[in-house]
Length: 163
Image 1: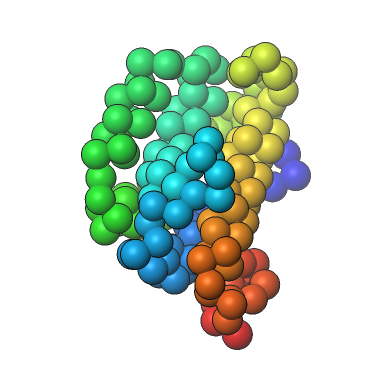
Image 2: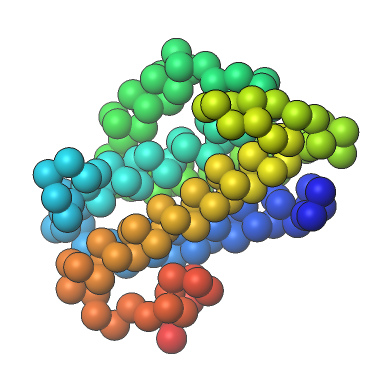
């Protein structure tokens, strides 16, 4: 694996840190903002991010996607308000460490098929979850910019700090 387990956990935890930084920039009056009718609102995007990573890790560990478990998590996220959603995202720092703690190097190298793609658990964790976190936080950043947060810069997006 290109990343060690500790490096993967650290990268996922960094994604949580940056996402929490960006969530702290959300104007509560703009929670219903959506660029187009069919896109998620700001709150819906954050709700999705509150469950996406941990739920996908469960699927990757099992080697199969459980639609019923996903639906339960999705419904629980949909019932959360903004503060609850941000708190749920905050729990992912520890959740990632816990969820990946029992995985061995052999587990990361084991081949699985998920959503029609074949690969090792490790590569799917990176390509689906870590990359997904970076993509969705970029989407949140663009929502913030579209809602008038002109002071935000690439430092907010990539480093999770104010310039």
